[in-house]
Amino acid sequence: MSPDEIDPLAELSAWIEEARAAGLPQPASVAFVTVGDGGRPSARTVTLKRLEDDALVFTSALWTRKAREIEANPNVALLFHWPALGRQAHVAGEATLAERALAEELFDRRDLLHQLQTVVSRQGEPIEDLAPLRDRLGHLAEVQETAPACPPDWGALRVRPAAIELWSEAPDRLHERRLFERDGERWTVTLLSP
Image 1 (tube, rainbow, N blue to C red):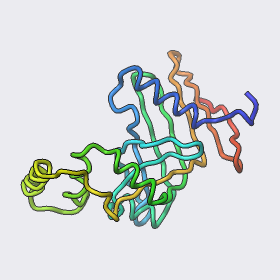
Image 2 (image 1 turned 120 degrees about the vertical axis):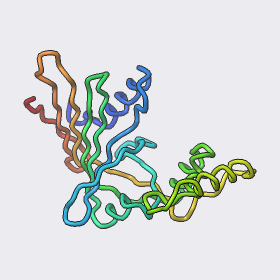
Image 3 (image 1 turned 180 degrees about the horizontal axis):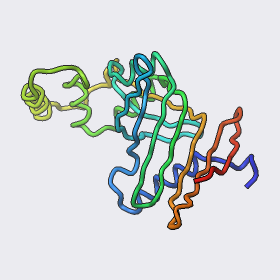
Image 4 (image 1 turned 90 degrees about the horizontal axis):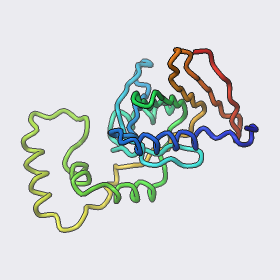
């Protein structure tokens, strides 16, 4: 493969589709790591919403710790892991807030219960009890005639990778590790020792 043909995001997309075809649960789930105060890493599992030619797209409420940490330090890391396939993909890059139209499009694709949950709950904020949230969610689910509009504090995040490592398990423990690094608009690839 020539350097012009290297496309780790296309391979990542193929791996996600293979995981989906194999019936693996949540094939697009990924650990999403941000950097908080004092350089402390912060991780959570999220779902990839879209894979673009040069970026990975996620959604988030914009008041969350994740969004605040990205605003302060856009450097993030992602880790996909499919143990049943013997594969993982590590992505390091920079996250930015995407255009409002994309946030609205992706919010509209959420199922109604997820849309309503976004309206009812301020994810990550302290609460006394879940019961009032469940009551409100249940009430809205019963009376809501149309889907809610995308809240103004809901957004799409675009992660443009600077490096992607694709790891494939081998029976002899000499696992294949390919490190792709962005060089302008092209990628270079280095084989790493397992």
